[in-house]
Structures are given as C-alpha cells and as structure tokens.
Image (cartoon, rainbow, N blue to C red; front, side):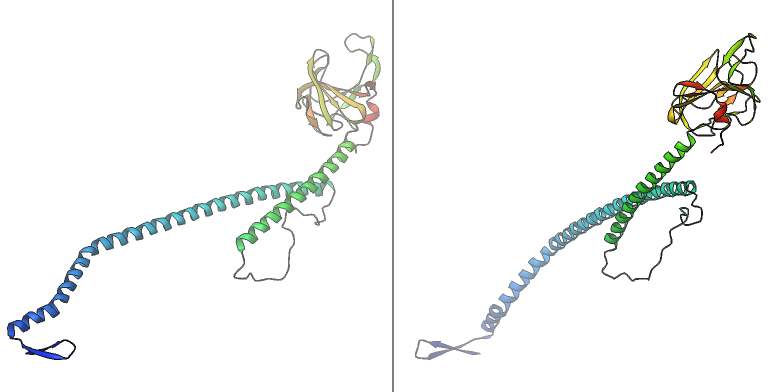
Length: 308
C-alpha cells in the first residue's frame, strides 16, 4: 500500500509504502478508537439504567399518590355536598308536611272541602317537555330550584300561619262566650239564689247551680279560656276556675278528678274534670258558677243559650 504526503504550498509529494503491520495499526487507530469510545459510552449508559428506571418509578409513584389524594379529596367534598343536600331536602320535606297538615286544618275550619284546597295531594302541574342541553349546569340549576322552592315554602308557611292565627282568634272569640251545660248528662238539682241549705236546713244563699249526674261522668268547659285557679278545699272540693273573654269567669266544683292544670288553655266542650262529690256535697254533682267583671251572675242565662 502506498500513501502520498503533500508538503508545503508547492504541492511536492512524498510516497510512503505501508507493510501489513502498519496497515493493521492504522486500521486500529482509524476504526478502533471510535468503536472503543462508543463501547465505553454504551457501557456507562447501561450501568446508569437502573438508577434511571428507579427515578422514573419514584416520579410516577409520586404523581399517582398525588392524583389519588386529589380523587379522595374530591370524593370527600362530593359526599359532604350530598349529605348537606340530603339534609336540606329532609328539612324541606318536613316543612312541607307541616304546611300540608296546617293547610288541611285551615281548609276544614273554613269549610273548604270541595277539593280546591286539597293539601293531601300533589299540586296540579303541566307544560311542554323541554330537553336539557348537554352544556347545562345541572348542579347549579338544581341548587337554584331548591333555593326557589325554599323561598316559596317559607312564604306559603307564613301566609298559612297568619291565616290560621286569624281564624283561630275568630274561633276563640266565638267560643269564649259560655253556653250550654257543664256536663255531658245530668239535671239541675239546685238553682241560683236563696235556698234551704242541705246540711243546716236554714235559708242560705246559693251562688251557683248544681247539676247532678253519675259519678265520674264528664265535666265540660262551657267556653274557651285559660285555667286560672285550681284547688282542693273542704268547701268546694276539687275546683277549677276558667277565665274567658269579656270579663267572664266560670267555676266548676266538687269534682272527683281534674284533667287540666293551672295556666292551661282549654276549648269549648273540652272535658276538664270527672264529676264527683268532694268537699261540702251530698252526692255526685258539679257546682257551676259564673262571674261577670267580678260579680256573681245566674248561670241559667248562659246554660239556656244556644250552643254556637
């Protein structure tokens, strides 16, 4: 093999003859060095592969843990929102139940039994079917509807409570005037005014009327009012006093048992006691008195009134 070597700027050349050993050495220098460098670099990279994969695995695991934490947080927030929404729905359902009961009671009191105010059934609704767009915010719309329903419930609840209160006041005024017998059954055994005392046989003033009946029979309030006095004395026995509207007070004495307490509101026709013979009494009866502005009056005029 001949090699040409060019010298200087004049282009002089010199030829060199290479034998077999020189050819081999030259080949090693030309081709062997890059191969050796490549092999060394490849080996170095192979040695670094375990660390690379270890770092990659740890990075992926950290990302996975972070995503798992985010999913867990989202799940917890969603569960909290669902519980809050369920609680809100339950409260609204309870309020609706109370409104239905109140509305039904008002309808009965107002004699609105034709069906136009039927609180026991769902209201009549209608309208065309509309499709919900794919991009609609259902959660936002649901919350807005719930808020609107809550406002409607509060408004109707206030109106019904006001209507019920007005009707109750009217009914209370109607029922606060005494009328009728203070017992489910019985007969007048002693009238109001002067009479012969059953114990002494002397003339004495009788401040009420006596209605005799069967032991334990019901004693009724002749008007709505508030229980302002209860006692157990040697004269009246077990006694109840009820204060009504317009300065009227009624008294029921000689009862075997009392069914109302001091401060309790009673309604017309409500059983307040059981007829007995406690106190200064010769047999089972109810002693009934009526007071008008603090003065005793004859209960007969109220007993003879038509029950309203």
